Amino acid sequence: MGMRARLTFVHVALLALGVRALTLTQRGQIGQPGAGVKNLSSSDVVSFVRELRRNQGNTQRLGAKGASSIPIAVMPKNLGRHREGLGSLLQYYRKSLSYALALGLPWVGRLRNAHDDTDYTEFLGLCQPLCHSHLKGFDSVEVTVSTADLHKCRMNGTFSVPEGLARPTLILIDDDDMDDGHTNCLTRVRDRFLSASMRSVACTNDHYETLHFRWGDTKTKTPNCARAEGHRGVDMSEAVQLIKNVRQLCPLQVKVMSEGPGVKDCFSNRFSDTFEYIDGYQSTVPYDLLTFACSTVLIGGTSSFSVLGALLTDGLVIAPTSPKYHSLQNVIDFKLAQSDGQSDYLATALHKLAPCV
Figure 1 (cartoon, rainbow, N blue to C red):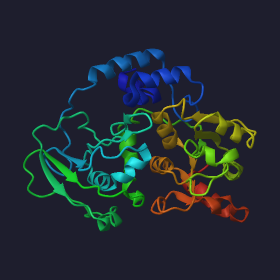
Figure 2: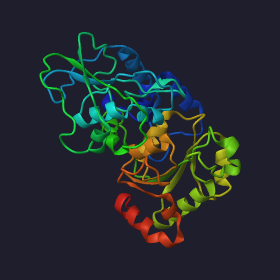
Figure 3: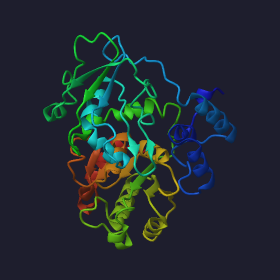
Figure 4: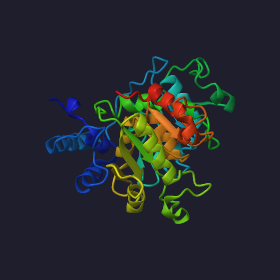
């Protein structure tokens, strides 16, 4: 079996995290690749690490033709100004990302996650095939993306490449403000993610629902995993009841993604069946993203990381009403889905977006 066919979850995780991800995966019992993604042998890992080290720092061939016959890439003008978690960074670079995704151009900014100091631009498939390129000799041109453009970001013709480009060109876009709306402008990130980082990762036939429970920065304000107002999470008891409602209609396996053993205890005190607990202190962000992408149902709050999960999955997302989700077609309201009098609402959404087989 060739290298390309053997790449699996840990291979992809290593692209972003290198040997450190391998160490975490080997020693941690929580957040192991389980139902939903395929595993690999230790010899495959060794071979892949060698290949990774050989390729690190190499400049890739400039082959991003985009809508032109010359290499073109997109970069935010305010690159590196923000130190945030991965989900929040997508809000700061909404304009340049929307432009690049709409036109199929490489986005060569940086998405350096403040929580693990790792740049996930390549892992999300955004910069290919210009990742690690120094872009020496590229001309630069500024393009303005307005809020009105974002309102029409899914319409053909909203964005275009400047006319008259005759040389390799870097398009600079001013991402002037944080934008937690217009999330539908980033839906193409799933295609980039699947075609690049996940091209050899297969989601298995073990369908599951994932609860992303925001906790790390709210635990002192949310005793017993109850939801504190204004903290963008969901109440644990309400989430567990919703998981049970889903399983009455569709017998899915369960995963819980959060931070620390306290959340695992909170969940197990309310849920008697088996589940996989993905502890962010022991797992890795690549595994979290792969879990999102392979989820049949995703339940989350309004945190930016939950919204990123909604972008990566093509399954059903159940979340509180929020401008962050308004433009996404695969999201239904948490309260309505939870209501006993709205069983048809949940059942219809499940059969449309997460058919049980």
